[in-house]
Length: 390
Image (cartoon, rainbow, N blue to C red):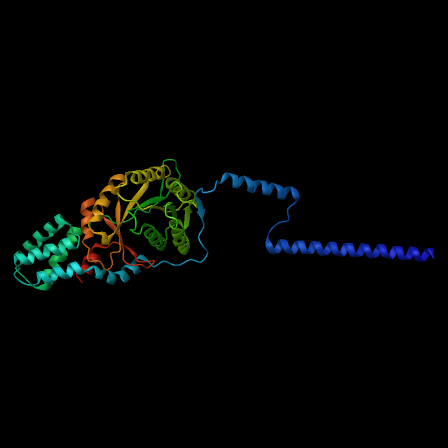
């Protein structure tokens, strides 16, 4: 009997030991599978505590509302090439040809009366060419048609083309400075671009479209959402960035300091060695001194990181002469280097190209010709004039 008990006891010990060893093996196998599958190591208690402490330290260092980098989405669009969009948009630009068609109609009548010349002047002024430019163009048209002694529509068209092209001045440098450089400290400096304008001209959309143009030119870009007063502006800019794989620096607090966001955007551009940093700003009326002073502050703060290469003024082409007073004040505050004319398609006010250039002494560099994502193109003087007279 005792021998039987001893045998049973020994059997139980062996059985329990075997079960324990098998369970341990299964547990190890399970842990190994999880590690391989998730690529996440199993931490000891000390390691887990150290990781938790580090995460808390990072959270304390980043205050709520601080500008932060938002990475783009994984699915990207391929922007249309600049050459392709110019070819596609040239026909659309012809919708702005009301001025040219009216002038050709008058000049082709033969011997022009004073009433005809008055009609020419009204057409030019109605197209926002401006008083001085209109007088200059009329004088040259009178002289050339008399010198050549012709009323042939083809010749008249060529005279008009020559004079309009001279007023638009194809010799102006319309390129956008997007070549990064090296600062005095030996560090990378991206080409920084500040975009300004009054409310409703389409600045944020223009920046998104401009980012697409630069991506199509193989430029690396960082966007700065320094319009912190319009709730949807940062979200809108982020959406544009996500579509083409461009990073966005933004703040999630409405009304945050826009200069801080602009500063961080340029700093991020330096860290990433980006080619270009585009900074959006809130729309502001040119007669609001406080807001204009803030714009000057944004530019000064950006220049602590890298020189501001370009200041682009976005103007709604349909606003006509009202755009001239806007342009003068913005130019005085931040030194405009180029103009972006939006909503130029379908307007009869194509003469604003001439007027704004004469007023500011700076070129129109880009034109917006529609609602599409790729409906922004570098301004082509000859293509513009040919479209007017098509």
